[in-house]
Length: 416
Image 1 (cartoon, one colour):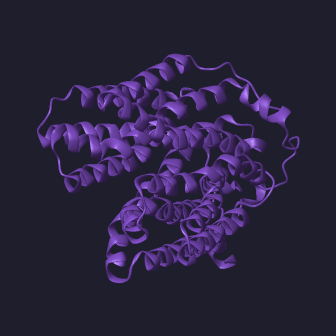
Image 2 (cartoon, helix red, strand yellow):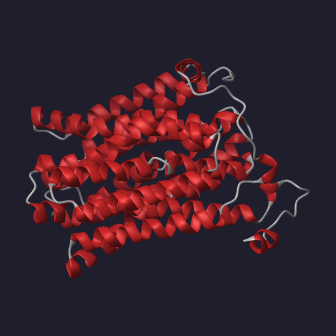
Image 3 (cartoon, one colour):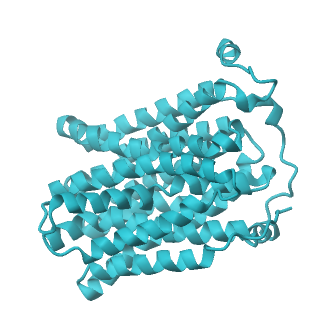
């Protein structure tokens, strides 16, 4: 390891953030994100096979996602606090072990409740990866390149989902869903081990946090910051839009446009692919905007673009030609999923240096609440109306409201 550090070491006047090694950090952080996403996104790939193998009802299938998503609501803030005080290498390493243990428990689960408990454990481990990887990248990159680096790293999530979609059905077809869970555990362990083996914090920026200990009072002060309110309001609206599209797009295309689910799955793949590209390109744009103090502008623009795309989807007549639908869905993927890269970058740049991990944990906790609540809420709206148009209208209204509330930049503040 020391030879790698020397080879990729500092060549820029002692500033570790100008070292070639930072690109290796970015690579392993992206890999750890992709391997963890292979597990969480892979659950969606395996849902139908689990339903058939365990004879689950539709509600029980939904509980699988609730189980894996509920734990971060209670752990992300604590993980964020730990990241400001302890090594990202240690925390992500332990987190990947926890994910693998949860998956192993799912393989051995003798009953449906035991399977749900195992997936809760997976969610606990996954809580370390998102904020931990973002924190590690933020330490190694200067503001001029931070957005691009964050975007590349965040693209690991759709990349992991795409890899799961391409490989897990093949594994299940050969040896069943339990073997697929074991293979997923191996992927997670591999990505975590590579990160743990290679990542080191920059020495000049390392050190123990001097901010106050985590408390309700400090959290309240953090939440009162103008930039944090901006982050939370935008994140809830956009992550709700993202979940609505990912969960209900295929069903909408089937019912409104008569599209078979298999064909709809390719458009769902398209939205993920464009979302990955959006995370990189919008983040790079945010680096350009940061030169004029407008780092958040790509997120603001994404809200308007997402609302326009949803309106186009809502107004498209039945049996709209496939190229037109693909263009609308690609646009939505780019902006309604791509916003996350510049959003995370804005948090890392706006938060006090000793509270970046905690700020990420708080913002991601609120997002996680929207992730858990939005799908069943939208499903209830559809059950009451029988029309997917109301779903898109509600998402448009939420995004426009968030735009109105966050249009003006917040006054400079600092948590202390």
